[in-house]
Image 1 (tube, chains in turn purple, orange):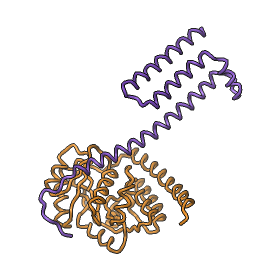
Image 2 (image 1 turned 180 degrees about the vertical axis):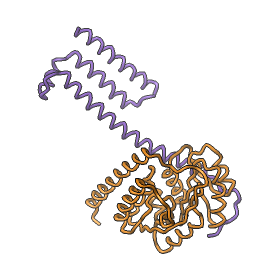
Image 3 (image 1 turned 90 degrees about the vertical axis):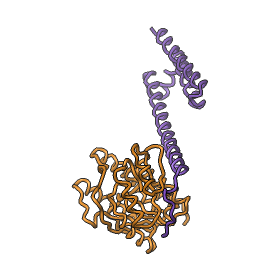
Image 4 (image 1 turned 135 degrees about the vertical axis):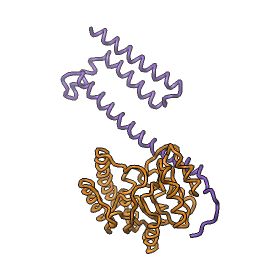
Length: 119
Length: 230
């Protein structure tokens, strides 16, 4: 039973890492994110084989059940990632707004009848 | 003059403003899908066409960028839907002449009525903003304003672009920057076209967000004071 679970985890993790590699190869993903997610895949594989490590870590933190610790870590990690991505999206939105403004300014047309206007 | 799909009203508003005020009229076409830009241009306006909708705040920031680069000394913001009377701009400009940097045209002095919850929100905003500015401002969300060169330069760099922030938060920022703000009463037209941007749930969300903005503003002010030696 345990072996089967490990096989599933390894297969999923390897597919995930391959997907990340493929996205980087097609230049659809920045290297920094690819490295991060591949790291996640490697850690997942490692923990599925070295359960005793996970249990030790959990005990050290005062958590009785190893997988609970894993849950906690992954939740915190995903929370951090979501926050980071919100930050990046906000930054990108501001940049896009600036670009839109620049486009509007650079294609500004003078008024049709060019009569001089006095204050 | 920010405009979104105002092809029915924009032509007359632009012509009115040009005739009555003898000034350059800049229309910011905020991603309209109709003929707003073409009609505004034909009516003699300088048209800044945004590639997609940025909202009123984004449109205003675009206009202020333009004013800053082109060296305009004063700008007035009026709606493209015809609810502001261009003649009233003169009142705003007269107030700028007294040495104010930002002048808000208030709809209330001319008998503009609001329903219950909205009125409550407006009063709250008014009291917060007035306290911060040190001068009474009753119509904090008015989109009928004028600015001088100093305010143009300040806001071209950092105009708040979110809905309602563009009006309320801008006043708070002006206060921080030491700009002098004043309010004068203006007459309003009935809307000739378009519908007011409301919707109850949306309004609530925006009020909530605005409260956060105001709270953050206080925090920033404090940290800035700590950091400054002035």
